[in-house]
Image (cartoon, rainbow, N blue to C red; front, side, top):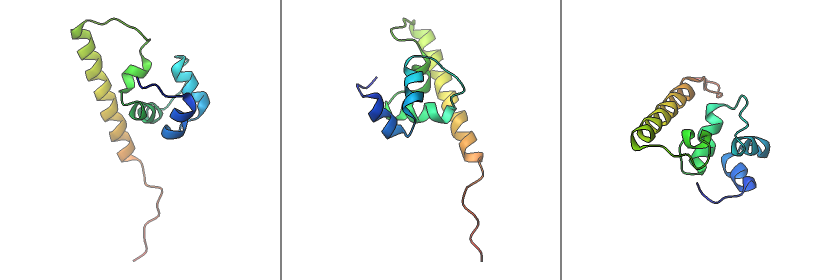
Length: 93
């Protein structure tokens, strides 16, 4: 992943320093998928990569399955975000 400080990652992803630290140390709590997506986007990676322990060895087949699962999670997250009601009030006619 990119060589970036936690402070810079926090600023660019709009995720708190403490949550960035939890993700880096793999101390996951109730972290929203949208938070993981924001961090992954800044790091130019995918959500699954954030959750994997560093230096994991996967065979090609397992790596492809894991990447597909990550892509599926991303699509689910996008779909859920698109179903959220807008914070904007309708414009009167």
